[in-house]
Image 1 (cartoon, helix red, strand yellow):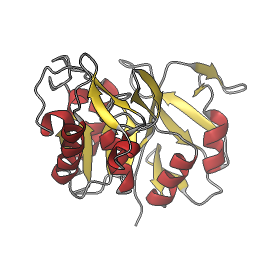
Image 2 (cartoon, rainbow, N blue to C red):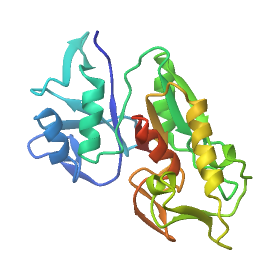
Image 3 (cartoon, rainbow, N blue to C red):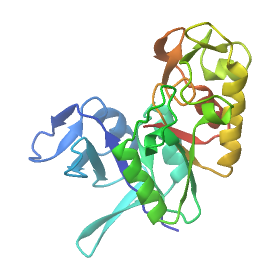
Length: 251
């Protein structure tokens, strides 16, 4: 059964493709993405209101993961192997691509602050138009979206003191070789972070994908707060989801 999908990037570092006027590509990702489909990628603007969002359009696929066809003058993308494609993205350390397969009932876990909920540590919110558009697309195809704030789910208030991991990232926290501590008094909040991560996974039971807040000690994917600075690693919830083989993207 064919699965319609789209790939959406968010970035502002563009270069124009030589010999292809009007087409733009994300600098630095071209070679990595060409490894996936073994063809040059061409990009078009996805939304005039958000010029940093683009739709990836592969012209062909020799690797067997992606194909496309023309229907009534429109290009319809088909992902032949969702799990294989997402594994390839993970191998290439590409974390800002969301594959939406449009399966009815598919569950997407999302950091609530990215959808406009006031649950950040400072009492604020971080609505992300790209993520909101992806969520709307997911719902329009019959999918279900579960917004979560793992820190609130762990019993912490909003607002709350900022925290960071000490001695390692979220994987180390889950392995009990690192802790999560408040910045202002070094208070240990490891239990709240771990409990909240498990509760978020329970609420999103059956989820296959997640979009989480970038660089958060709970939700960061690829970068998070460790020992007082942004370092490579995953937040506690991101690490738990990855261990359960749930694909995680940053928003």
